Image (tube, rainbow, N blue to C red):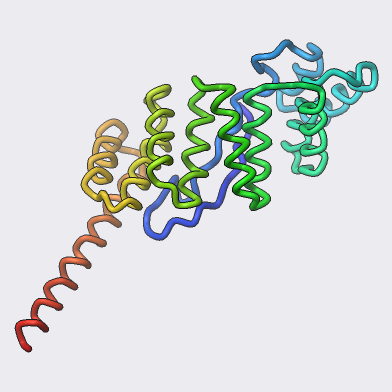
Length: 235
């Protein structure tokens, strides 16, 4: 699985993943996409995460076959893996112009726009990825994160639940669902989600931290309510 690109979400209270913001999940493996292999050797280098050789070989493939849309996508992915996002975007655009209609392409393009702060465009692209790859948990997980980022908590909750229905073993998605519940003000469901998550994996620290934060939050509100009640009685 290739490296995830992080998305900084502005959350007020709760921990999302090991002291970091929740990672947007790349399409699982560009070299093993749902489309045909563009070139066995080029895709071998990509699968081995040998990105310099993957770039070199994919450029050779495109030189000989400029209309190979999948090669453009894979080349863009390799550029992105080394941090060259301008060439990544350029190659993704060429792949789309050549007619590639792959959920992984639109997911990774959406992540690129999200990193650039173009959240509305990112949402549209990742939503398209969910339509092209409706049974891929990555698409719904990322759309849930983006919906949460713009404050659409109910759609975010539904996308996260759908992602978990497709793959129930996603710890970060379960933790994130608890965060969404908390942001909605549904602290009971947040507590239940994090408690169940810790029962399944006692070593998953974000859930433990979130339960502690929730406990402190509720104790602080209770203390404040008692203080206000005392002021009211004094009057």
